[in-house]
Image (tube, rainbow, N blue to C red; front, side, top):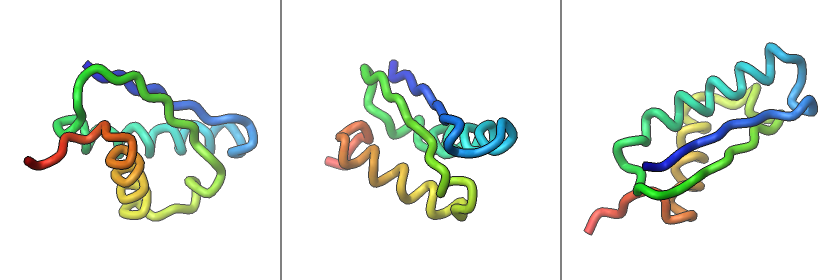
Length: 76
């Protein structure tokens, strides 16, 4: 089982902004859960640009990050 943690520092903005950033990351993670290899502990840290990012861009960046880290299952 792979576990994900999401955090956002005060540099992201107000509590509302931090919570929104974390919700957006969690939603993006949820869309990739079936493709994730088991046995990982992943911590994602939200940054300020996430607040203004478009949804497809967030998903694309997360997918690139997971592929680069070899956390996503590869098609063989």
